[in-house]
Length: 329
Image (cartoon, rainbow, N blue to C red; front, side, top):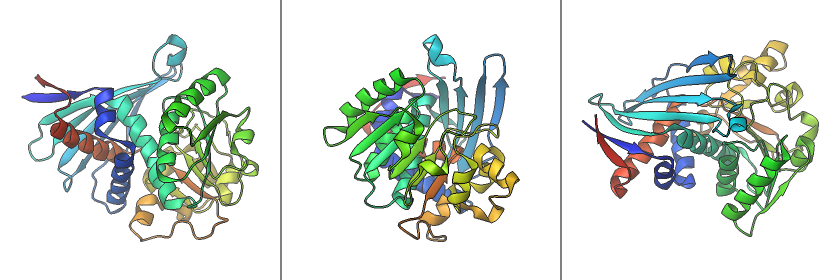
């Protein structure tokens, strides 16, 4: 049985950011329509190492594929000279149950997570958004910037990271990728990065809020993608309350995994009816931005459906291009 092995470079070649944003919009719409079979992720903790390994399956009969992603998140790895995120994605033919492709999970995760923010920004941010702030300089951060720049006319990107050297390295890399029309600068603090920004992306593993309401101007759109456990928080409770309704990838996942939203719900500053799935907005079933002064907030913990739709796009394009290595199992 031949299985196509696809490297990180293969994944990026087969799924350009614009196509990834479209794939995420399709995934969120399918989730909200109830077309995707998708249990909540299973997380296995490694307390001594401070890491987590996640197992994420999904199936969409209309798409014709099943996916299983295994991804590990070890925030201490960069200090060892290792990637913080590692993993693999197995794509299975939905009609036969046979694996058809195995692909780099870290690359797919970074790309689809950025593209999710791109889909949310396209749906919720002001059309004239020109300044982007990115809090965090890890594996997810460059894809947040690339995705937002793909859907809005961004002229300046501000980067903050608690380790300035990492922010500077990301700034140099992004400056080369985004071109001369986009200024990339390093900020000294979350407040300096966020104040006056039109779009803000947070992509950190923080357990203490980095971004409060006082930093965020009216009309700003915020994407927060770093936290995926109840104890993790990137946003202050006051910002969550100010941004109601909060747009999420899936209401069930948000209630059980999104630390900022769990905290706000328990404190009573957010009600269950204040959570709106992005897929409902994309399908026209619920309104998105209704006022240019509105602060919009998209909170994503990440769904296996995103991996499913991204992996299917990669596989189909890989077959067209002849990319990857076939291996007999």
